[in-house]
Length: 524
Image (cartoon, rainbow, N blue to C red):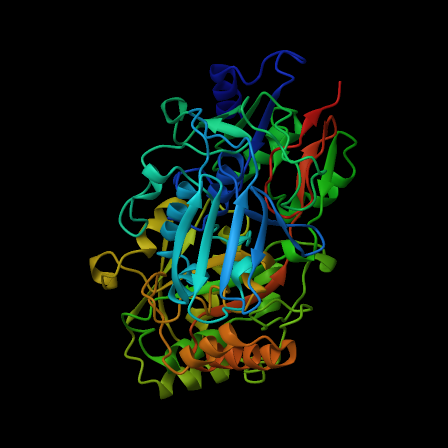
């Protein structure tokens, strides 16, 4: 496999002599880039792509504060029903056209048709109107409590801005046909070689903010002439490439290689901040047996041993949180023990008893195993074995993540190419906001694979949207978590983190836990 990789980099010109390509950042991400529309998928590789090509109106800094990004600023009326947003001057799309308020309104509407939190913001809105080329207004029917948190969230699906002509496409049925953004790098789809190479080129029209980079906020400086996403499905090959200097950046370091990387003076590890930690989850298909039955879903969750699943990652103990059943990330303001008691110290015997009580009739449980993911490859196999031991008739379907993500959109039963369960992983950015959280935000919307729906959860979400008091919001968040666990809307396997790695001659890598591949340069 390593010889094949060396032949590939030679063919692509990526293994040129030292110093021949100082302005090219060669990045190896955890998954292969397949989807070029950040409003269609929540895949982390598409998020990394989008942060190079597109920009956001508002951005989250390292202190958890929301700051203007494409915006000059915003104003809100005393009754908090009218929000006025003004773009900063000089913003242009990659094709040279100016960014306008009309573009931003169209982009927000497109995002709001698909995103869980975005759809709730749109439901609370009377509408949006353009005032002039740089100003637009959002009018609410009632004081929605999460306006800036919604349009500034770094959690997928992220409200990236696009030209109005592209934002007119419907994200549920159609991806944008072009990659035209206003971000620090441009992307030519004609150069894209799916399965091998994606090339991003410095955007000469991009005008960064004057502030230094800070989290997702501040100046985004395209210091490298090009950024390359290099596809390497084989995990060992990724490790070999960065060790040999054939790659500059590795998104996730496999646990077995962390200590050897620490001892390598040519490699630097980047540990994420707490919000960059991961929460392992298992998406369940509520449409078909066995998981159309709440008791079967609860039996599956009882079978999952957080410690055993995380141990499969080979991580040092300090990178694993062990048991964590808070869907809002342990250690964060909305963390709660609601609904957790039955899961703590659960046994396979309890899982088997629950499964028998459900009336389970040995229906196939098709578990989608993503072979090319550093995290999902080992954890999926442990989860499958735990489910077998609990009494489920498990059938493992192995493929690359992109294939599995497409299959997870199926609404067909398993005998016609459907699925039952798919392990996934979220970052803290995706989960800490209760009504942006993936186990809550898509409740009864039909906009998330598996189509989970608990009607009793809906009024709790609506109450949170309207509540301004922090203490009452924490109470409502605890109620939400209780509903998720009691109904088995999604299963979880705990909290952990993996570091990224880069070559020592590369500087400026932002420690956010998500690949932000601007502001990076090579030390000469």
